Amino acid sequence: MAGIQLVGNANNTTAAEVEVNTKATRVVIRPDDYGSLGIYRLGANNGASAMAAGLAAASPIYAWRSGASNVYIVKRVLFMMFSGTTGFTAGNAIFNLFAARSFTASDTGGTGVTPTGNSNKLRTSMATTGIADARISATATLTAGTRTLDAQPLASIVTAISTATFTQFVNPNTVLLDQRVGEYPLVCAANEGFEIQATVPATGVWFFAVTVDWEELASY
Image (cartoon, rainbow, N blue to C red; front, side):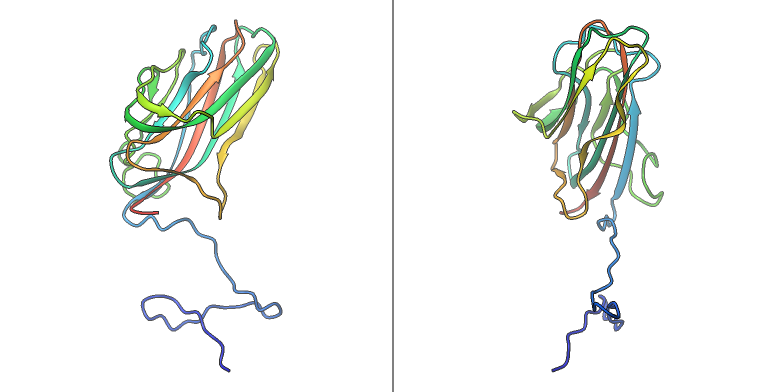
């Protein structure tokens, strides 16, 4: 009996290749087909002035909100944090990432870092991002917009904090979210997104940075 051949689209007659010994199909892992939209990466930090001491528990320090159309696929969120000139009271710090539903009004305060024009595309020919707002704290907490956070975080970092100054407590590029090939990402419809909240010990001032990778697709 004749075997079945796999060929490309558009009446392509080139058959798929297989390995000589195992006969396994050769494949190339590629990003999702973004069509007329795009794939993006955004790095942000709280700036030259440290986060002030005495931040309330569960303070929002980073907010990311989708736009009004298309599908927003959050693939990766990376985080880092270190102390500044004034050390903390020894204890624990908690950084939680929550999904935000019904996110109809953006958080305010801090620094807006929403890309415009060609900024933060992974290819110049991609479309400008359609996200409504990306925002990071500068020296104090963000002011919450209109959104409903999940009861429990999607991801959490808990780290021991000492009294030391200028000390790394969360290493650069520590993963808060990292959905690999074959794993389901955080899929945001219109007016959805995520938020990072911080709970830190008293007295310390500190710095942090966040990196986000996402795709925008017509459907998923």
